[in-house]
Length: 206
Image (cartoon, rainbow, N blue to C red; front, side, top):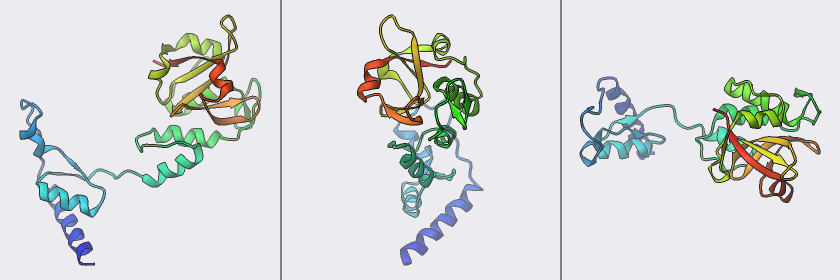
């Protein structure tokens, strides 16, 4: 109890001090040990405040990470999140999960793979993509599979001379979200035999 009171008092003191001091890093001074004291110290708990005061560093009083949000969407999407992912993307994608597959459509009553991708990109990023998976591939910058990151597109085809027949949005940890003909909007893994066999390339929207 006493420790909690002390930490609370320290927190109030640090907040009050933040209104009177504006610590700025000298523009001409290179980063190094001698400037470490000017780095903002992230604050999540009372112990962080005590540690910051002990080190004599200014506090970073920005909004704390919403861990409950990321835990909730980690469960929904089956992903291990590191709390830095795009919240809008996670929320929007999750709201589409379970939407049935419907060829040529792009609504929550039913959507095909390219319709789903175009809606997500429009709603989250404000970007209008081409309507078909084949034309989407022509519009992106191709990237290596080991360089793919959240939000990139993944494309599939059935053979070397076959056209692209499917597209999804990469999330992380080899997981991507897409609208499948046999299940609608879902999260799948690139390691699954079917998608591993037909994976063709990844692309990034410029």
